[in-house]
Image 1 (cartoon, rainbow, N blue to C red):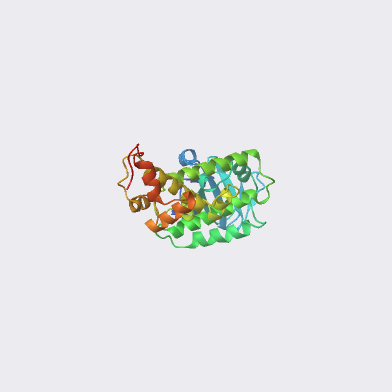
Image 2 (image 1 turned 120 degrees about the vertical axis):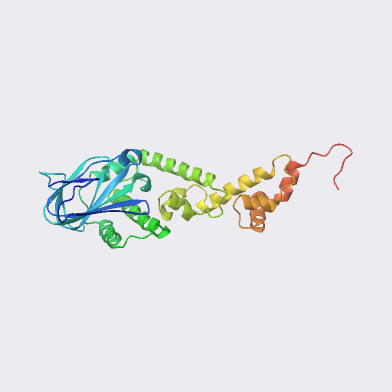
Length: 298
């Protein structure tokens, strides 16, 4: 009998489990020898994903009758979630299929296509790390959503991305364009969350589903670290607010708090370092009317 995903048809002795881990969706199938088919659902269009698969028991050929790509326990394979997939299970099996959102991989379209077209991974540097990690994750008891779950999911996504570049040659112009687009999204996210005092490189990376290491790598050669960029943008917005007309009554402490600084002292010190004057001097010089002839400030 054929088992079809995402709505499997169960027979006697079959089991099916569906769970989430952070931004990953993990589907586990157990049963007797037969074809198992993945049928793309709406998610594959609205939120494209890569299908990461591996067996903890059993042996299958990938791609249907006549295929020579054999999947053994411990092997990992990746396919485009938007395309149908058939596995010919040859014996009693336990199969795990993990939906990994494309947005979590920070890969170009070309890299994702190449990755999904490759044979199952068994050797190399990355696959021997990814296989045991997946085994531990799928064996663990489901728990409530947490930051730990997001970090585990991020570790899986990072290893999948490493599979794509493990044997790849030098990056193409397309790769560079995709990196630039990702940097623009990162900066837009920072701008939208400047007022959040908890905004840090770690939270930026987590929100964009990339590793902190990759986040820092994206900013290499741009004259600033991610942390410095966040502070630079906060200072710019605070300076703009202090310079608005008719706002000479606003306090420096209020502006500091509004733009995510830990304290007015920290804000004033950072402002002076960046602009060579205190926030209050900047505000007074921009918001008070210019002195006319015969007038003087006391």
